Length: 258
Image (cartoon, rainbow, N blue to C red; front, side, top):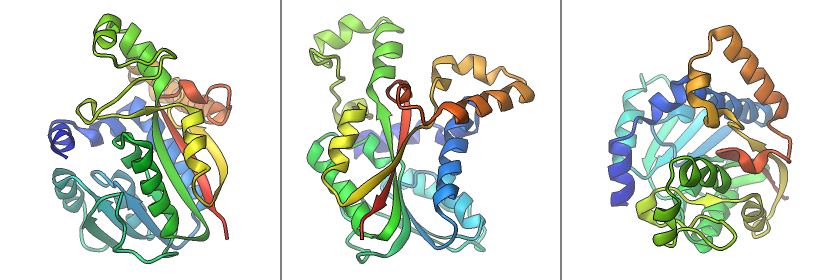
């Protein structure tokens, strides 16, 4: 908890999502939220500073936002003018006992899987999200992917010897994370293993930023017309399964079985 509190007190998450390169992830995630949510209630677990929860509430959806980090909750609440149908609570993705089974039309888990380090905790968070979702409702789960970190951090920033000395790489090049590293990194097969543990059907697995973060400065320097074309290209390719594992972030779109 201290690692997360310290990280988010010193990191501008809203600023990242408002940059041109960060907008790609936001635009993509919102596209798929709206594709599967026409009306009804939304639970966002790990709502952060409310980038999605507040936007959905202002659109008229009935939103419940749960966030663990106090600093993020303060920022989220500052964005509200009192007209929104939103309930804001401090809570943990591993324990949603405040909510009954089958309560929400859609559950968003867009941050917690970044910060859960054991398979048991990941299954617990996913199980809780599925439990509180209505039958045939949707669960959208975001992940940070392994390969971009190997490519950009380990090799791109010349950190190979450092991470090898710290035993942060397995023989098959899977990054090993602990809470002090903040982010847990997965591969597509890891996500599939988690999905197999809960009563869901995968609808889609989407690359939410694709190649964008490999060229952040290039993307941020684009004029509006060129950036619009980049987004068009990205949305045309973000469901291609041969590219998914190379994306920095993915979105697993699940539907709860009846």
